[in-house]
Image 1 (cartoon, rainbow, N blue to C red):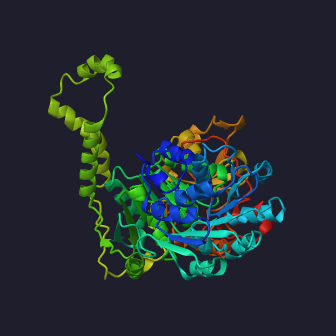
Image 2 (image 1 turned 90 degrees about the vertical axis):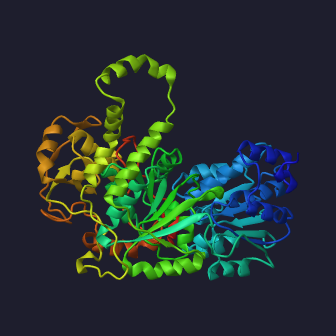
Image 3 (image 1 turned 60 degrees about the horizontal axis):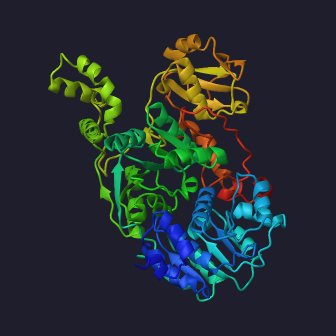
Length: 612
């Protein structure tokens, strides 16, 4: 029986590689695009949602059209982010593993440009690149595009949103006039239409579904809460979905880091992904997420581009995007490859109009949902636990030697008592937490309290003491690492930590007043890398709160001045409206050296010197 990919015109070597990856049948975009692109004679515009298999739609035809006996760049693929660049390059390498002398190089900021230049000099046929780093290499006159026959612009709408129009112009000016340009995009705003007009001649256009619409397999919901309750609402949504594996979107780097740190403190398996992380840190976070050793990825729009992870169950919009079209890209992180998923928005009553605008663009209605009560959450968690117990696989060989001792422990209990006690292990925790939990839902016409504006939704608590500690970023600490270091050695809960101010050779940490003596006692003999760790009360006052003020310091009120300054610098940073620090988690203290951010251009930096 002929393989469906063979029927499209793909050679046996490539078909066998695709089959080895587990792909038996082409997706609709692949089925329609591959025969057209194999002709190699037309410019092409392909409109399809994320997760529909666009990489194979252009990658497989490229492998058929390129002459691999010639070790010169013949195809250039431009994409907006490092993660997407790496993903595309890895996919094409996998597709071409049976082709002799096939070479693909990924060119992106945040990694060694020396190594990338070496790979180019050794010979390459396909270059996958982010615009910023590609321009650096072109400026060094280190690459010759005179043999390029095909240019692919992937996620074209997002590249324009990130301010890469000028860069794309400069890069394409170095390629031959008679090349063929293939443009792939999830949405078709006027800017993308302008690219098609400027760089293409009578392109063949293929649209899967209706332009700019969302994935039909995604359910869209929104919850209306007070601004101060947003974080509590997020936790309740997560608790109500015990098996959630999702991405939480925030607007800025600062918000992303704050939300991730609060979730970590509250015991959730989460971490942050944003543009201030080094490439090594980003790779580490994404590795954990892909391996499902992390349940929640907290990300900015820019950092999340190129996240191609299967089986994401939920996308949660902690804040709505500034550009409505970005919602399509966010929600596209779930329901990939024909699966189903849920996209959730946590909004205040003033944002309902924006929901209506999004509905018009994606062509789907949102469901107004009610946040579950504390009782609902406890019930869901209880039966989630029961389901996991019922479904667990028993290793008979390993467990048998312990069964007699287990039975002896339970000899004085009835079957019903054993079940009750076992179920209560997890149930009691949620029951205690959600006892007398308030209703977080508000009516759409309900007025906000005047002081709720600007609050990010983190709970308030008592007074804090600002402490000095003689470790910092020079010791390869991030804020998340320092959080874990203080909690583990001080034997205190992450919930008792307030703001962390990471410096070079020292840092400041705010700790609840009641935990300061415990921390001092447990840190008497702590050392790090052979150096005694010293903690003392800081003589410098807290910049964000004193006794009785907000516990975790992430609220918009306390950060307003800094955020304003960072937004002014965003166009020169790693992404639109991102600001913050490097991130997360306190489970791993392996060395994570902060690199100079040679990839700053990935979010729209116009200063080329800072990209290397």
